[in-house]
Amino acid sequence: LERQLILQNLMRERQTAMQIAWTREFLKYFGTFFGLAAVVLTTGAVKRKNPAVLLPILPLSFVFSYQYDMGYGTLLQRIKGEAENILDTQSTLLELPKGPLTFEDLEKIRISQSNFFTEK
Image (cartoon, rainbow, N blue to C red; front, side):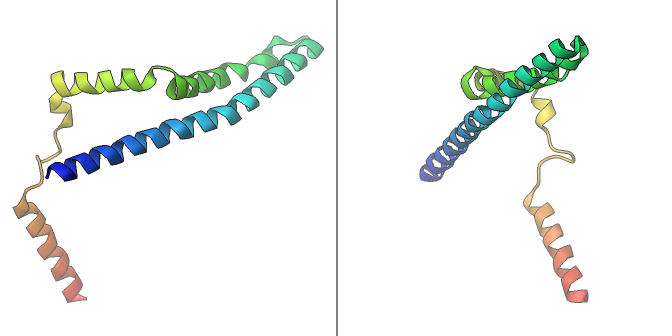
């Protein structure tokens, strides 16, 4: 059981590392897109003398900020802290509908499914 817990924790750590690495890689591409879009939109706003052309920068900046915070900031620590808070103070939110699954529930489902396949 201890080896299984260690293995599960190692797999979780690797999945989290992959998620952070993916976010950092995505940020490189999105950052380039955001930079080019900002330059093009600013140029267009100056040439047309219309500041409304800059409006697409606002949602793009939110996406860029989120991705940066996920890849290099403290977003994961804040998420972890909030998750710990939920576990400590709001555990009723984590309850499954109709309670946790029991062996009897699984057997009922298994039997009903086996009957379904044998009837066909």
